[in-house]
Image (cartoon, rainbow, N blue to C red; front, side, top):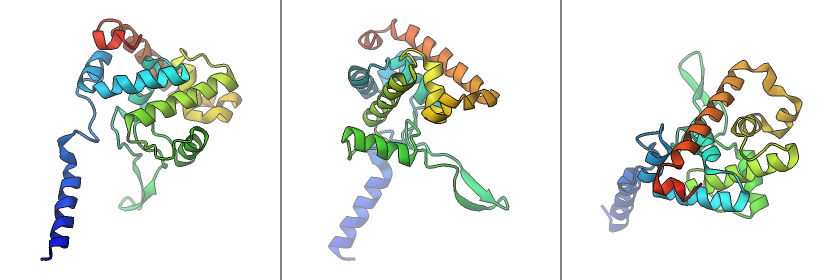
Length: 200
């Protein structure tokens, strides 16, 4: 085996292992905001930076990410199946922490000039959510603290939200209520720990 081939094989194995960083895995306790931030301090830095830039509170971003990906960096939608056995592609192009669609992510990168951003990076995902919600605030008047309204616009798109498309989806209204409830829980929890108080 040539040296070049051996070196490529070693690089492939190391890349596959991910270096033990926990890439792709969720924090252990998703029900407590402080536990999430203490296990993953880089999340706190990401939410703080996005809040400074866009004005969206960390507890709203955290509740949205919980609903969209359960904090799994490389989350994807399930496959569609034909005849129950043949995969025919994924349900949508949603990917990463924020579950941003390809087209919306491309729009974000163009508008913010962040062409190297990745949906699997918490800093980029938090910035994307901040950008999207700031636009919903600007165009639709949804308060930055209104996790329910912001989530409905995030899920349905701003055009769908303005048409009230969510009103015909009782399941989505239940999900949005859950996002609001979790956001308020996270907000209260963040006030009880040192890493959280730096965000509030």
